[in-house]
Amino acid sequence: MDEDDDHHARATALFNAIQAGDLPYRPLYTTGYVLAELVTLGLARANHTLAATALRRIRASPSVTVLHPDEPMFAAVCDEFYRYDDQDISLVDHATSVLADERDVEHVFTFDPDGFRTLGFTVVPDDTGEA
Image (cartoon, rainbow, N blue to C red; front, side):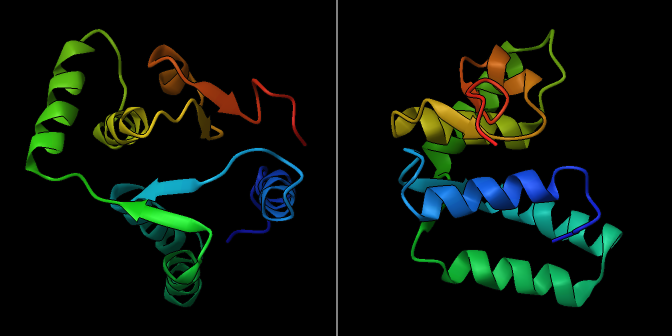
């Protein structure tokens, strides 16, 4: 979304490689919470048009499934958040963790890796060396 972002070129290359089938990370999941963060960041760094375009593309993509926790799953998210009381891991990241665990996902794409490592995930691209 922000071509001036330090990670833009690397993220674009990785997603292109995933779409081309050159990297093994399928299926692709995100959460409604992550999309909310993306749009908020897009509004702050760019503008409404770019934020809305990014949101539309992700929601329309046949390659990406957007997950939403139901009430029992949200309770599990909150429980995990409470358990990690010695860490500053966001509730959004805990939601991603719980929803990923539910689907046996082991790799998380992020440029903010510490929390996900603490939660037991392999971080793409930092831990895998891609791009």
